[in-house]
Amino acid sequence: MKNKIDLNMLFQDLLIRIKNTLSVSNIYYPKRDNINFYFISIFILTYLILSFIDTGISYFEFICLSGGPLYVTGPKLGEGNKLHNEYVVGFCDAEATFSISVTKDNRIRKSSRRSSDNSRIIYSVHPSFAISLSIKDWHLIYSLQSFFGVGKIKQDLSNNAITFYVNSVEDLLNVVIPFFKAHSLLSQKWADFVLFEKAVYLIKEGAHLTTSGLTEIVSIKASMNKGLSDKLVAQFPEISLVERPVLINKGIRDGNWLAGFADGEGSFYIRIKEASSAKSINRVSFFFSISQSIRDSDLIHDISKFLDCGAISSNQKYLQLRVTKFEDVETKIIPFFKNYPMHGIKNLNYLDFCKIMELVQSKVNITTEGINEIKTIKEGMNFGRT
Image (cartoon, rainbow, N blue to C red; front, side, top):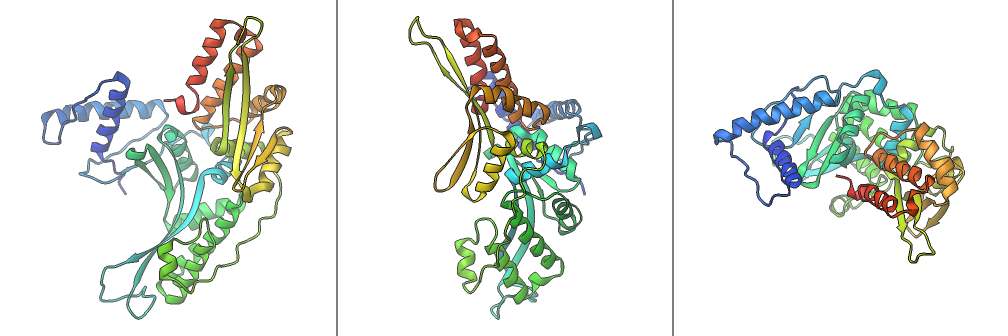
């Protein structure tokens, strides 16, 4: 199957980036019937090929279409760049979703194999494994697609988002599900995966084409993630929840898992308190944190135990592990992520975090020039990173 790219969307994305870079208020966007369209087509194609070569992508195909979302294939990474299995599991524990889409089809058909009642209501049922990230993490999205070897990538320019997803039942059964059975998830997402697997097998067997089978799949969906939407609750009022599997806590089994999980849920940030008088000095504080739903309380405690540092706070919905002691950050957090690297844009925040640590260790923060250098680095971290 050909890889599809909406070239218009590429133009808009690239021109917006040029506009932001040049800080101009207006930028001309040529229409398809304008001769400039073809000149810019050549420019963008050259830009894309050079960018893809620079990032290690060994092939690129595109078809210019009139509309629709952006679909691209991932990079063919060398074996040396292959993500670690446990890193992928940890990152999926943080960012992946296993979902079953059940939507009402209002079209009238002569034959209704999927009828759930005598009024010929038809439902479309689609399973999906997906990871959605900021467009800044497109390299990681491509790496994940390359890792699994299946699935597609779509880009939502309006929300600056990019998504890797697998919705082929065959690919789910042959690739995704076997991987997570061999490398178990550690968060409560494991229970969603178990229910997801059951639903996918039902779909493969055609159970969703019968009233009883559709009802069973909706019952499974009701116990996954955030449950049923209000519309589905109204359409399936008699649904009873399938018992949700109980996760047995096994602890953190590998540092690569934690690196992947932190790439999704972790945060590195800096706080600067400038000297208020000639007798005081500029102070720089370091913070590493991981937040998670209250339902994964055991997991957060396991992470704290694995890192051998940090304090845990909580509210009614979330827990947060925070490492704030300078010694713990210096001797435990920084060395850990050096040994178990992250692969997303968050790793750039970690590297800046390390740069600031080196400056503080050299005591340059006590000078005006030094604290200004630290401020500059800090301003480019997290939300300041472009």
